[in-house]
Image 1: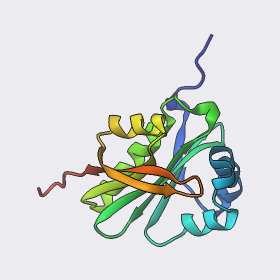
Image 2 (image 1 turned 60 degrees about the vertical axis):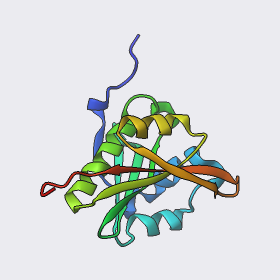
Image 3 (image 1 turned 45 degrees about the vertical axis):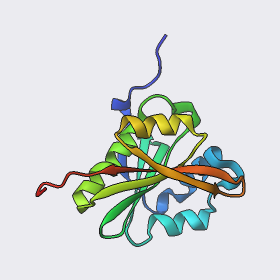
Length: 159
């Protein structure tokens, strides 16, 4: 019995406005009532300083991730993988792409916030070298769930 497709079968590519319908479906699957609206997604993927990448398998979007760069620091906006593909390394591929992009942009650090109860994401970020900075109380609304703030310092070539 096969464990399913390998991450070698997954293709990463930049997301565009044409991807919004597929992104909307994936966002709703992952976040339910807390999902961004279709218009919110469209605004986000073309927003200033934003870069979104999608993971495709057999020409179907199975994951996505976003980065915001303010000229100094990069912020992970999201990393999401369809439930049927979680635990197969897709999230790590996406996160690695975000970190690589942050390096290309010259970011000093990559920051993120993650729900304190999201164990798979916490394991992903810790394995990638992110360190916990502190806890934000009631950050995720409307659930009023706390978030860990995390960072990954990036070594610059001239350091």
